[in-house]
Length: 239
Ligand SMILES: NC(=O)C1=CN([C@@H]2O[C@H](COP(=O)(O)OP(=O)(O)OC[C@H]3O[C@@H](n4cnc5c(N)ncnc54)[C@H](O)[C@@H]3O)[C@@H](O)[C@H]2O)C=CC1
Ligand SMILES: O=C(O)C1=N[C@H](C(=O)O)C[C@H](O)C1
Image 1: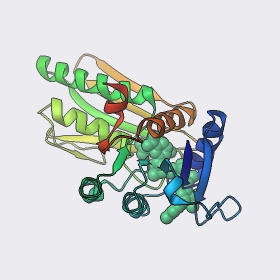
Image 2 (image 1 turned 180 degrees about the vertical axis):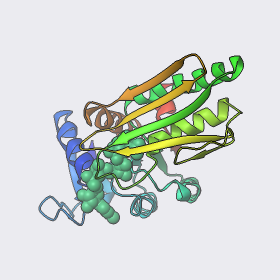
Image 3 (image 1 turned 180 degrees about the horizontal axis):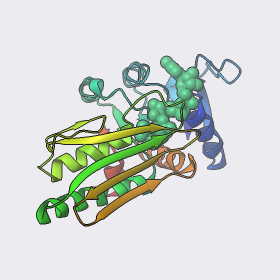
Image 4 (image 1 turned 30 degrees about the vertical axis):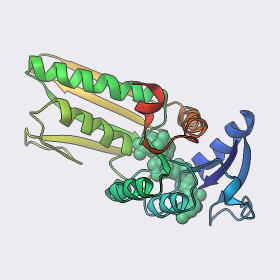
């Protein structure tokens, strides 16, 4: 496949390496802060898919630009979902293809699946309070992490005692606390904790490296061409 990389930071560079190892061609690289790596003389009509990992402030415009050019786009940037409905509308209008996941790791998507099951069971049996905690490297610009938000949404859908989330500790029983911590080079750790007066149950995922995110993004890029609409990891993994 001919891939366009939008964003050549930690994720973009890791994607390039794994994409080449899987036999793909890097048709273009777009990143204003990496002129040494830029490949800008590409023909967008020959690009099979774009993979976008940039910044919360840049992702929406990049996604819109791909959809306007008819390029199937796999987006991993977090922190821009307040614009997601507009991207969905343009995708539909253009008969385009957009794939979005707050986390492309297969393990995290299993964690999301189990998280919803556990939340429903904990609601059924009662007696527990729940919180979400995420730990990431200090360069991360958005908080809570996109993954923590997806986990929180899964809890809110299945544990009706919680009506909304809040990005700090809270004494309000109807609020789900999401605690964000920034620490060294931590790749991404997410922990859902249920506590009662007598015990504690935790569901946690710790990424050891970015390779899991990269593989998931490449699987999405390999799957997306030929599809029309807005997709996510549930579509890819059949979860
Ligand atoms: N969905 C997932 O599985 C994952 C999502 N992420 C998200 O991906 C995004 C990027 O993460 P990293 O690569 O770690 O960040 P990074 O800061 O290492 O790299 C981001 C790159 O994007 C570039 N950039 C900024 N604005 C741009 C624009 N308008 N066009 C093209 N390039 C632009 C920057 O110059 C930088 O090189 C973040 O939002 C992060 O939360 C990160 C890892 C996994
Ligand atoms: O910025 C990161 O690094 C990560 N961002 C994603 C998020 O916000 O959840 C996914 C992963 O945790 C790494």
